[in-house]
Image (tube, rainbow, N blue to C red; front, side):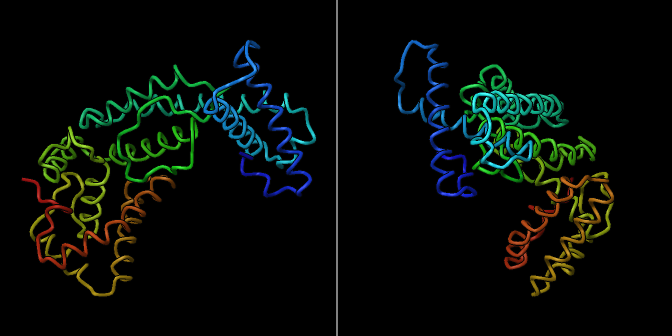
Length: 295
């Protein structure tokens, strides 16, 4: 493993870089075994090397340093500085976790509650010194926007928590009672126990009401609203349909005063609705599954 940075080095520098990594691995292995052994299981050695690479890459990125810094500076000093970068990521993730634990609708989904409970164990078990790439917790709750699977360790956790907080900030814009009623309408088989995302049904309902200029407070469509939605969206021009949804997303984001990340999430979700909208229009069914009328 080369941290993905040797592509920016000359061939000679890349060879020297690899040598430095192996030297650091040997030193970390000695520390990990407290000098009691010179041999490690292959999986453990790989995890140690992954940790070194991820930590260095994060440190170089944080400080704006080129990858050949490893060739020009004391590698031990760099490794200690890189560990500090990882620890700062952990602290930032802890702040996000505290915010996530105040999710207004946490009790509405078992998977979310259990995932947040498991993340608490992450901060007790995570080892930023030796195993920065590990994720010692179970994350089962499905986000509206999946986290980049190439991320590892605390970097994955931080990205996951940032997305969860973004989704929760959107949900907190609405009356919790109306949200619960909507969730029960679109997932009558049990949104509390199933692996469902809480953001998506509410975002869809709010986008539908924005399209029909209906009130957001109750999150409920009307028969008249359904007719308006059909008239607005039944165009065969898919590009026009996409534009219509994006404009609704922008209006809704301004109305709710969403930040940049919240706006981007909403617009991506609006585009994701296109296939489902097309399916409803083609089948000739009503809009209840997407833009429900709440009884």
